[in-house]
Image 1 (cartoon, each protein chain N blue to C red):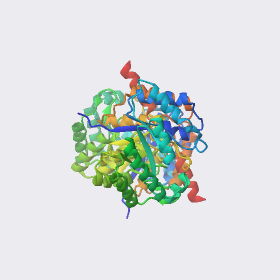
Image 2: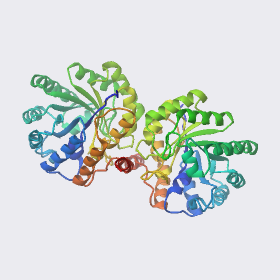
Image 3: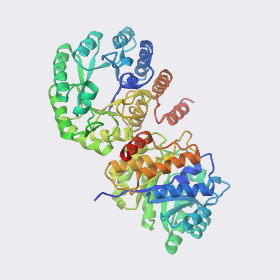
Image 4: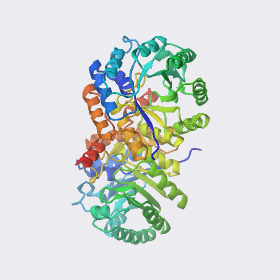
Length: 305
Length: 305
């Protein structure tokens, strides 16, 4: 039996919020449904943040409602939340899981959330306790886990200490995010090996951006270290407001293709994933597309023909 | 002291022969000189093949003569040769090293060179003996070392057997080529580990294409296995006539950047490499450019500014 790796598509949140074009609620639901139809097992469908700060994520409650109303949509929907108010909105909207952002640098915590690292930890700890009572899963994501555009390289021991704190407190998933796409596979290998050794692989995940073209190399390094959960983004949608020239999250298209070729089971149908990827490109007009797209489309056409 | 990794830029040969535009001798020399000026330690400057079959490589003797006449050009120039006649032309042109192509499948040997795998071995063995007498280095490259578009997955034991035969016979370098860009890092890891275990790393190299976006992941996997020599192509020039949609060789730009960030010494100045990469794009009009280019240019501009 093949070993399973769980991919979470964060395109409808991390991707869309970094695209110039703002999609309608109907378009967001259409994209999410297409990703789900390809068999992606988890989807970050939106965030409950200030619509003034992030206009692309306005109306995420309506996205949840539309998905709920669709009897064929069964994929666990995740909402990113920044604070207690966001948590309440996500809970009321019916989110099965929430992503909270922690920080490995004060520079990024201040810039992204106007709070300190420890403020973010305190808020996340409070929400974790509420979510346990409410039966909602908590994904704790450590932003700038490798390096920060403001404060430089992150301290691996600090990252490990934050990770331990939240795994011990009961976080369902703990994700290391290379927010600005700065890490190399050697760094990834060292940090993920240390975390897998301390905590085992079941709750750990990684989130890579492809800014320096090392996205898939970093996924491979993390797989070698035992990581079995990855965030990625349909058609490589994404970017980072603090990383000029950032070319988006690592594409679900590429990650799924590589992991399947390496013999892992992802549950994803690559042909239907290409349909979702094409839709992401059509809807946004700026999605880069998976980097293996030219090959993958030819390959799939041959299989069908 | 940092550990060294040797990059051979094969753009002026493997790259240019797969571009639609045929460059003049002067343009080829200009590109090679720019790559050398960036500190790339080895360059495959052309091939001595039939100008009817590969028009882009016509006049490689004049490329050698022009490089010889340039007192500031000191980089070891490599010529790819298909047969004894090619060897004589390369020797007479002053090549310091020649690349011979071996095959891990009969399908590719027939299609690419109209001979059998064993014919290619016999010819290479003869040339190896002559080159030893002439003081010319021999690089034996095993094409389709991972899989073949005609015959399917290559047999790792066959690849190891060919490699052993030519290392034992005195080949100076033995390169595993993923000619169609089909390998994944898991396959690379297994095959390169076996070869490093048998022969040590000093003569072994890898040659990857980025068709499935796994080029850098494959470089990393090979580095982990102990490989310290890589072929790559300036600005990702390349492709493969037998792999539709192939997006070129892995870019020297990306490989050098990743390896340097991982703490290896390559001897390459990334700023000057960007100049060579820009030149490759200008001259050919179709070079994809390094995939990390947007980031790398911004990064280098900040360092200067």
